[in-house]
Image (cartoon, rainbow, N blue to C red; front, side, top):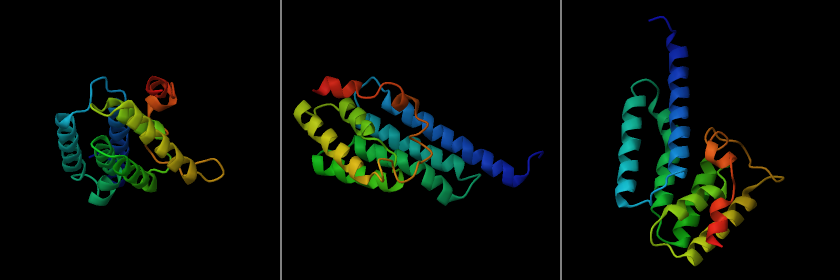
Length: 163
């Protein structure tokens, strides 16, 4: 061993964060519809990540970093406006800088959601997000959404498709 244990744990934590960022980016740039098989695969991916990383860093740190994946999985499988808004509100508690574009992209990837309903979900989530802002900014930045590439590129492209 040439690396101090403490430095190694920080390195593993940084690897986990980068893995989560890349995963979220790929999820949001998915080209196929989100189906039940996709949701199940997301659940399996969470378990694999948890099992691997808890070998090297504390379970609580792993759970805190992987929580956004389970939150996004729940959001992707939501069936009603109330469920979408409840899950999005929960995400904002842990990831206060999660923009409503995340909901917009996931709703757009869902099969069987009428455009009218999709627009309503996105609008509600935009209002929730705007109400959570402090002086026009999120209360604090998380490690995920400030670094997700697809969110920093073209915002609102899906919204135009829904209108």
